[in-house]
Structures are given as structure tokens and as C-alpha cells.
Image 1: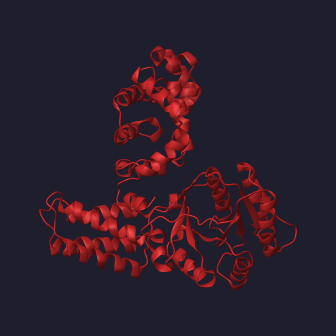
Image 2: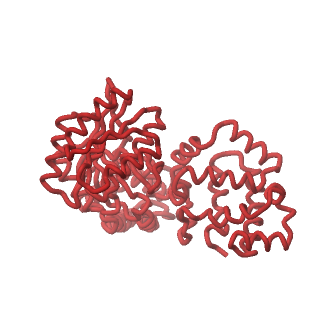
Image 3: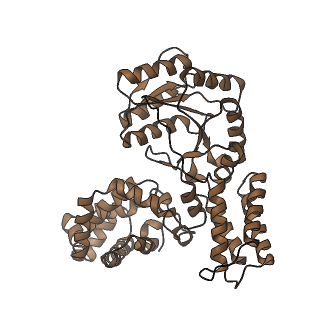
Length: 447
């Protein structure tokens, strides 16, 4: 996520890092490179201009503190400005005083709008809400079936009708929610391949009829400035309350994320980072700024981990690590928990310094498959006590898993090294060192 921008900003800081003081010369060079990095990232020209202007003014007017280096202080200035253009503070959903809360979803066709509707429902269900989905995209072939299929995966009801009457669907869904005791209604509206009058009028009419508590505009982050321009047109017509950025996992530049709030003056409320229904999270400007600057996002990582691990399981795991009884079966179970936390590449980006450390290593969602195949080819005895795995057993495991003996050897070696490291870990801030050891494991393709 935003790797290209992160790399280029890192390069821009080199003209400041290591200097004994901040001077007009090195400030000018750093700001010039930052402006180029932002424009290369497809950030809106005016946003980039104002950003670099503010950074330059603050850097030139700052007194370097004795406790920090010039590079650290300049990084702090850029970080603060990033937080500002990303929206300053996190803004969540505004709920109705009297249920149901009505959320209207709008956006172009292809932005991931229908899938986002289901993702949001799943997210709200985890927050102890009871959502109902309204299938008001009555024109696109199979749109209603798609929404019903997604809703069935998360056990959420859908309201739809046979007629192509989006306004009726939206209005009836509120009454249906009250009957079913659902406290949130999420209305999926029709999109087009481009902005047109018919689509705008329909969304505006639905909004007028149902008076939603939240109108969210869904936009494909990978479309850069096109996303920003479309958001501007939508906002002028229907005045939405917030933005949802989809396909953030494929956005290496960051133009939409860095421009949209400043241009439309509306907050980014959610972002989606994958195809799975759990690949959605609330948007925090400060956390995103940290990730852009390569600082990771440990807070979000911990929050994801807390959803998967209960206290008893954590204590049991810690006990096994301390007593040196952590085995390959335990390791396999931990891999399954990690996979539930979301996209592997997204998780790596949350660990400070890991994107840089794994820059030339492809980390995909299939990264764990070779390891899983190897462990699944072992007997229970071999999982519990890896030391019994001799040469003939390694050959059998390799053949059974479709890997090589070298892959099996690498896994066993790395597992023993990880056990030793895990035994010495006692604080969260050492997680980065543990994840660093994964770099050379077979799942990352290194030999």
C-alpha cells in the first residue's frame, strides 16, 4: 500500500538526514523532491503545492531541538502535514438517535460498491449492530443476486423487490428493518461506468426520500485523480458525508488518499484492502501518515490481533513458548490465526520498517501455502516432535507436499530459530524482529 510514495519520500529525507542543522539549501532540496514525489503519486496539483509550501514554511521557521536530529524534526513536520491533508482526525459513522440508522452507498460501477456494502455490514455486525441490506441497484444484471450471495456469507438479511424501483426498495427497507429489529440499513444504489444525469438524479431522489444518517461515496483508490474528480462531481450533486477508498491494497501511489479530503472537504471514513469480506477498516489519518513514512501501524496491528486471540489462548501460547513445548502444530494454528487477520501484505505494512526490509520480496496472500503443505504432510508425531524427522521422513514430506527436501530443511531450521526468538520476546515492540526472521523462509521464495 502506497509503497512508491513511501520510497520517494524516504529518498527526499536523505538531504536532511545526517545534517548537523536544517539550512535553507537542504530544505529547498528536500521540499523539491517531496513535491515531485507527490505529483508522481498523482496527488492533486493544488494539494501538492499547498503541502510543500506549508512544510517549507514550518521547516524554515523551526528551531532544531537539542533532543532530536534535524532529520527527525523535518520528518515530524512532514508527518503533521500528512495528517492534516488526510483529514486530521478519525471520523466514524453517525448513528441515529432512534434506530434504524440509514447508510446510503453511492459510487461508480466497478468501484467495488456492492462488495463494500456487504463488508460494511459484516464490520457493523462485529460492532454488535444488526444490519439489513437494501438492494437498490436494480439495473445491473445480477446485482441483487450478488448482494444476496454476499449477505448469506455473513448471515445478514436483504430487502429486494421484482420491480426496477430503487426508491421503493430504499423506503421499504426501513420499514422492513423495524419489523426485523435491525438497527442499521445499508442501501446499495446503482452505479454507471461514468457520471451521468440519470444516476445522479436517482441517488439524489433516494437521499431525499429516506433522509440517510450517512451518505458514503465509494471510490476506487487506484484511479488516482479520476477518483478525486468523480468525488467532486458527486459531492456537488448529492453532498455526501464521507468517502470509502476501495482497492487500497493495490494502490502503490496514493494520489486519491492524499487528495480527496482536501478537494471535497469530506473525511475518508473507511478503506478496503482486499476482496475478502473482512478486508475493511476504519480510516485514521495519523495511522495512514505513519505507514506512508515507513513507521508502520502497530496500533491497527494490535487491534486486528486482539480480534483473533482471546486471553486464555494467549496465556496458553505464552506458557508453551516459555516451557519450550511450542511445536509445529502450534505454529500451524498460529498461521491460521494470522491469515484471519487480513491481507498478509497489509499486515507486513503495519510493522515498522518491514516494507523496506521486504522491498524486493513478494509477499502475497498465498505466502503461507508452501509451509502449510509441508506441515500437513507430516505425521502427528513429527509435528509434535520435529527432531524425529530424519532424512527418509524429509524426503517423504517433500514428496507429499509438492516441495523439495531443501524447502523442508529450510522450514525446520527457521522454525527452530523462531522458537528461540519467541522464547526471548516479552514485549510487543520486539515483534518486528520476529517478523524479520520470516524474510528468509520458503514462503517468501528465498533460497
